[in-house]
Image 1 (cartoon, helix red, strand yellow):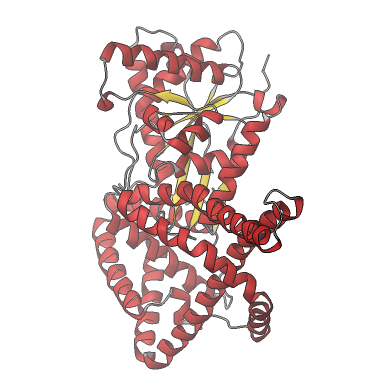
Image 2 (cartoon, rainbow, N blue to C red):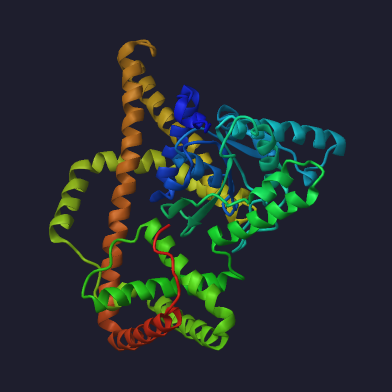
Amino acid sequence: MPTRSSSETDPLPLLYRVLRGVVRVALRLFFREVAVAGLRHVPRDRGGLLVAWHPNGVVDPAVILSHFPGRLVFGARDGLLKWPLLGALMHGLGTVPIYRAQDGGDEAERRAANAKSLDALAAEAAAGSFTALFPEGISHDLPHPAEIRTGAARLYARALQLSQATLDPPPALVPVGLHYNDKATFRSRALVVFHTPLDIPASLQNRLLDDADRDAVHDLTARIEAALDQTAHASDDWEIVRTMHRARTLMRAEDAVRTDTRAPRETAARRALGFAQIWTAYQTRRTTHSGAIAALHADVRDYDRGMRALGLDDADLDRPPRVRPVSGALLVAAFALASPLVALGFLVSGPPHWLLKRLATRFSKAEKDTATVKVFGGIVLYPTAWAIAGTIAAVLRARFLGVTLWSAASVWMGLGVAGLCALGAVAALWGSERWDEALRAVRVRATRERRADALVRLRAARADLHDRFLALADGLDLPDAL
């Protein structure tokens, strides 16, 4: 008989819910949008294993965790569990340590510890919960998954063995896609996509039950690698990725012109779906239509250079960004009324912001580490700054009035000031984003006036590229949903 997933039947522990809430707030402040797609693919009648590629450090498990519909137990390298704040957070979420050979230590002890960790994760999946691993074993800045290790396949095989008598169907193996439009940049967008569970033939499942069949683990690893290449939209180099993104945006803008509509606001999900369509067409046609693909690549690259030189988005070729007089008046009024709060936000939260930028530059060994430093450093630095401001206010009140610091009024004043600092930080963030949008609208309008001839040339190039893409994609089965 099928067994219900424990994530549906058991309430989440309070500590888990609190810590997940902290992660969600930190991500929401760093990213403009953190979206999810494909939750319908996560089975509700069993547990299993999530596997994902690893392009953005500790932010990767954070975005998966923040949107997973139940309890999720990660396997992570043991070094992360030793970090002062991050380690405590991961311990509280039930993270299981994984010991890597490249980190040194006694080989026999490492193998024994990993076997114990493997059993702990497999037991979770066999009991109806979900566990998660990054099979590459490292985070990186490559435009494709790095070499896939056998750990995920071995974990799944062990979960299969433990669940033989308890779960029908067997544990699921769910590939997860992680997509960032600019992973290291503050207020960018992130998307996590849960894909259809891997179809593992019964013959391979039977082989995985046999510990002596090492080829079965390698066969499953190959299937996981192929799935992650698909979910990550793996490419040979970043130039091809940039070209495909420009193809996506020019197609979107040209479609809007031809239907006489404005393109809908680009969400993380729309962005990922558009890229998936371009990527699928590219992967399908690059061998059968290599000449046409090479010519398109060169022409899109030329078009991209022209757009970047002008500092325009594709839709700016047709009309400038909308400037709403009513919204502008409301914005000015809001700033006038909330200027003291906004000023407080800049004054107290400005130093942590600039300190985080310097820390990210100093301690990020690669781009993949930048967001990790900013997100998890921000969890400490911003509340600390607000708490310090509240404490200073309480101390000043106590000294000025000659009362004890721990009087109820002083404590409430300190808490109130700290709260106002947090609110001011949000107001300052919102205001700065609106201000940037207004400045960009002015700049785009000026560029359109000065470079009208370039706009005509680029519009013609975009229309030509659009038609050539449609011709190449004709007859292909392109994805229409994530």
